[in-house]
Amino acid sequence: MACILKIPSRQSKGVVTFTTQEWRIIHANSELVRRLEQLRTIYVTGLHFNWHDYKFDPPALFDFFMAGEGDLVPINNKPLRLLPMDACNFTPAAYAPTPLHEKYWDVLIVGNPVFFKRPEIALNTIRDLFDRSDTPLRVLYICPIPQYQFLDEDTVLYDIRDYYEAMFTVEERQRFMLLTTNFDSPNPFDRETLSVFFKNSKVFLHCAVEERRCRIAAYAWSAGLPVIAKSCVASILPEDLRQMPGYFEVKEDEEYADSILRALALLPSFNPQEYRGNLSESYTVDRLKDHLSSIFEELNIPFHGKLLGQNLDRRLGWHHQAIGGLTNGLSQGFAEFFDELEKLIDFGPDRIIIIESNPYPERVIANEFDNVISLSLSKVVAKSIYLNPKKRKWMALFKHLKNRLLH
Picture 1 (cartoon, rainbow, N blue to C red):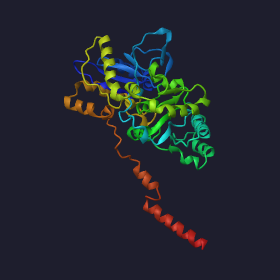
Picture 2: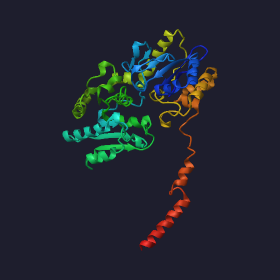
Picture 3: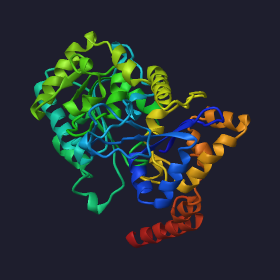
């Protein structure tokens, strides 16, 4: 979402970043563009990339761009100020290694069944693994199912469970669980709950061929899991870490199963500490502050104030104005958000402390919280036969008449 990294004061500018999806909305609206330009009098602005861009025209309204090295190729060699970090670099501290003997699953796969993650290749790989391994392995595939849309049938494998059940016997499915969820896609679990699955698994499989700087792979490395994937997934790592036993590059799909077995064999020699140093918030928040301090120095601006460094793996990549749905950001519009950003410089210390100490500062500003009971609850009760006494009474009468007819 549009993310506040530092609140402005009379002594120092604040810092705010926007996602590339948000920038598309802002750029198409001349009034929002004017507001963003005005905002730069009290904020240093950044653009966070949720995808790579190989034909990038750096907008002048941003002072820096958050992406990995190699993710942005500016047209005509146009200069830009790169801050080489993004949401993937701030894995929650809950993702930490656990002793090998405590782990339950040999292989973990996480991702919704969209085309670029290639869920069919993941299933075929486990089939191949089961056919080739002499040792019974345990596999968990966590697969959040998006809400059904007919026009997405060609890009989402909605039938993944049917495909899985046709491919594996009942006995095999005791060792390979496909955990499909049909709620709050793409994040049905909070990150701390999800970390439990990572910490109890040995290696991580990811079959995407275009997904650079993959946040879910960052979770795996931070939790001490070697990752088996194509080269794009390792783009988040420094060059010297793109090697075994932490990373197993796969060039052809037929190599996935062998790479998993090799990763399991070499697991005792894997030390994840250097990976965590690049990907875990336990280490990277301080590095972000250093980057921002250097940018302020380049701009000849004093850098004072607290960095709002909590939950950046979510906050940097979420979106305002309900882009991508309310499970992936906030409904607050950009005009209202700009209004609040301008007010922050005049807030008193008590209000600033409330904002800075909240896990999601932007939610405080937008007054949007998860614990608000939906107004549609009454509709659910009215529709339900179980919850609605009148409907339950009619169901009882129907069952009584049916029994009389049958007997």
